[in-house]
Image (tube, rainbow, N blue to C red):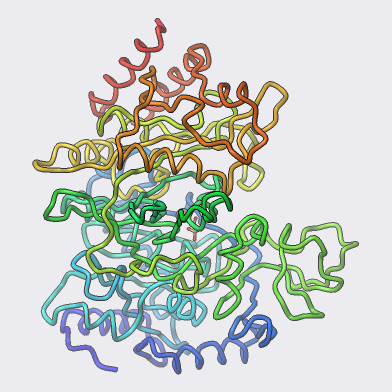
Length: 590
Ligand code: SAT
Ligand code: MN
């Protein structure tokens, strides 16, 4: 394959001189090439082919045991000025970081193949899509990129010949040395260099590195939003369709919400929920002043444990073909993947994620808690037919959410964009056993973007406010949800999963029909009877408790928000402090 963009060719030549690979392969993105890469991975012993009847064209693999997750303490923003990086990121001087990285990787691809992976983030032909290149010595990365992004010829087609507007990415697995693991972003150069890791979020550069960290910087410069959000289409029985996006910290059911199957009551009546994206949304203004979202990705890189026909049937159907399973268990009798809570019956004989023999008598869980599936989004049974529409889908509502035992009610609507921005900035979640650290700790995670804002968080908050000030903007409404509120006995009060449709219905009616609501200290809230409970065994008093706003709980919450703002420092926009003070006053707190 040849590339007619001389900027790309020149940079690839320079990179070849630096890394000195034995061979250079330009990836064209064809199925035949993908098959060849997978065959190579099978030959090398990295991939095991799964049962061709049950899981056609699927592969199982395990990673280096010390290379199983994103590494935030090894992730750097290398902006010229430290003040542009801010307190939520690790900063390094770009010159020093280039020198260090080049000294580590010089000649590092000797004897190896360098794959040049052109990739397109966003639909083919979209004015909002962007092109990147990842030069990598990892065939595993090439195989995963094939699923997660649109790679090869289609990416080159979307890059004008003389354009210099592409992201330059170097990736080498080196020796997988965790001491020399660096995930580095150079926002002023649109460059990413990640080394010594082969894990998704570190190595598949299109995802967090480009589509969030680098893109958030581009979005700030260009007047749009690059967000860690799912995108959903919701259609009512009359055939009216709206689109919403949602940002949730990890372990809040974001993937399940992205593939929500409504209760039968709703599907029988003609309601439909469809998936446009499960992780990232790029939001641009259309000529009508509305925000339009594209999903820059082409696949799902989902957490396996907990995924089952009970919790997420659409995900289970998506991963039945053309999927790569990393660090799950392998059922040796059936040659199928397995993980905790996938089925009631564990395999009799399996390999665990450390490639050890496993039986139900073994003491460890066989799949790593962060084991993943990489699956093409187009295979999802709930995928919206328009998920690749070049102009994106118009967004009517943005939903923020967290996991809160107390404090946050089931749902409220922000008064306006500025108040909604404040709601997103102060998002917070309790940690679960799924993440490292103490369970039940509160963690602030503004817009679920804490590890992904590629610049100063205070400037990012201001950018959100600026979006709201744009002349002629017709902005989505902003909501906050909490599916996880508990009663005094510590039990979840809301059933969650598909029943979250009941809350989506209220949002739908608010944005399409202006359904009335109660004005409270927090914003607009449904009266308990406004959320449909037919078919649920939930008492009126529980419904009231789900919506209750208790000023005493909020006192602590507001103190904790102030502390968080102080960690961000003087760049926290005044408007957000004003929202904080106004909320305190509305709650009657001194
Ligand atoms: O860990 S990844 O960044 O690859 C996936 C995720 O956190 O959404
Ligand atoms: Mn994510």
